[in-house]
Amino acid sequence: MILGAYGLLLKNHTRFVLFGLITAFASSFGQTYFIGIFGHAIQQDFAMSHTQWGGIYMAGTLLSALLLPVTGKWIDQVPLQRYTYTVVLCLAFACWFITQVHSLGWLVVGVFLLRQSGQGLMSHVAYTSMGRYFDQQRGKATAMVAMGFAAGEAMLPLIAVMAIAAVGWRWSYVGVAVFLLVVILPASMWLLRGHNCRHQDYEQKLITCEAASLDNIESSVVSKKPSAEVIKNATSAKSWRRRDVLKDYRFYLILPAVSATSLVSTALFFHHLNLADEKGWSHAFITGNYLLYSLVATVMAVIAGQLIDRFSALSLMPFTLMPIAAALLMINLVDSYWVIWPYMVLLGMGSGLAQTAQAALWPECYGVRYLGSIKSLYWTFVVFASALGPVWLGYLVDQGYSFQQAVLTMVVYLVLATCLMMIGLRGFSSSSV
Image 1 (tube, rainbow, N blue to C red):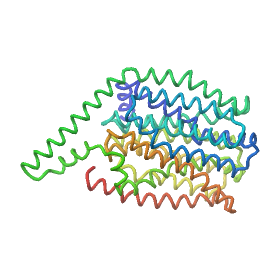
Image 2: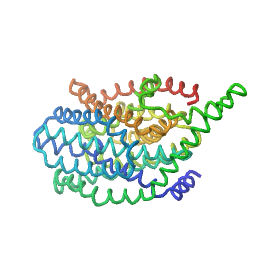
Image 3: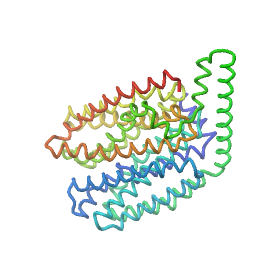
Image 4: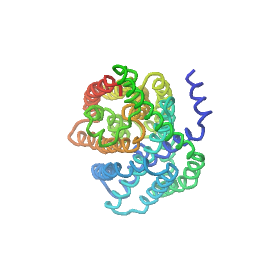
């Protein structure tokens, strides 16, 4: 039944869904799980300590977070084809640029470009396009984006390890730049053929829905007290501006939880090789199990997409962080090599659930007309969290705690963030937004 629903989605919207999938996949080249593979080689090349490399990575990521509210909102104002074309070119340039730097200052710039164009804007393109142009099938469409991320996580770290061993880290990133220009850029433009018609239909539908909702509530006020259904339809059609979202207390209650996946996952993937050293595992063993993580994340994204379309992202969100907390507890309690399998399974479950539910959450809460502007605000905090996570664990390890002990602080954070999120989501449910 689930596969049939996804098959129908692909049949009716093949190109556009594949566009979301490949842009999510291409964002991998600016994601921590990919850049982290290059960390040891870059540290050796620049004769850096772990602290220096972590600081440079944090600086570049924070600069990206500060710029995202500006660059991200342009997706509301610029045609999707032109926006995507520019982002892919920027990512290709970033991949080439970092291979040309030979000083720590310019390395910060290189990391910033990778994080801005890859993790920030390519992910933004994938999730915003699926969230905006799908309504009834939004959950399944965003699940396809999560599959793109999972495919990158499964395939690219191992390929990167082999490429670095064969030609070095600089030539490996040159190869990525060529791949983006030769494969991703023409493929994304071809998949967006005919998108102008889709956008015109979207604009007309949005105008019609807003007008109809206002008419319904006005007529209801004249005749009698508005029904709950009328109010729900009217508020659902409302599209919040970013400045209104910033005034909404519920946004700040939800924010720690929707940023938690990025904070924790980035920290873990950034320090996975350190975890392997602490537990006496080989680097190949831990990175080889990324495939298990990606497979589980893909399956959970598929299930989550179906659940979101049947119920809502609001109802699914409270369950997204607990599998990740359980994964961290497993790492803390068990030293044997077999723990990597339940750890990756639980981490994949949480990632698949969270990525899909979070992408569908914002349209449900705040509408779609200004979705790019709102998502860029959200991505700013996500990117900031991804900068904080590696430093969080690295600092605790430098203070004498083991990696296993340090992750317990993140368990506490995940529990507290879930509690705050449940309060904030209850506010949306009670107001029927």
